[in-house]
Image (tube, rainbow, N blue to C red):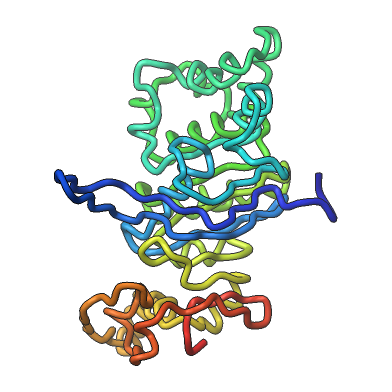
Length: 317
């Protein structure tokens, strides 16, 4: 359902924690995702950015139901993915897909390109007659030709392997693809090719993407909207161009200020990020220990403030 209906994906107060230490009288947990909420509309690319350990990949796995949530809701086309019937879940599995970070480990080295791309069709019961046509179409849509079908992953470059992974992801015509750092293992020149390919697939096939990355430059070039994560919490979210032009949260500003200049001659414009380290405050802002603007008020948890279509998790936004 599009138009005035529900978004393709709606995530509400999603949380996930992991047990890291257990004694007879005590359990210690690490909170990977903390009350995260966002939406992805039909034909939209949502960028999810943050440092390593911010919870980006965990959210991707939760959205695909690859791991179990602790609390919150994930609605796909208005239906809770954790309360689906077996038939509904099978449809969900067909209409959602994933592209992993490193195609060297996500592609079976013993299978040809044809077999790799064909595998989802077999799993979902597509007849033998239709499978070859769909495999060829997916491979071509991913920017390769039929000469690649009988090759093995070891015979391909990094960019070609990632195109095979993308072909596998689109062969069932999904509505949603979770792309988890799909360009980080590639050369810079190849990264741009993959970005353009994903944009092309979005336009031609109306595919929605959850694009996970630590690279703000990449996300800035592809995402319609952006979510900025820190320690499993959303610091800021909004339309990408607005967030890039005028970041509201101190953490978002620091992320953009830490980007290297686009030319060596502009190195002098690179700002020094202040080295600040305070003790964490239980129940306070998660960024308190590093924030250059922190005050006593930040020892209390801020509310998510709405500012001209933007949402910012800060007392002073």
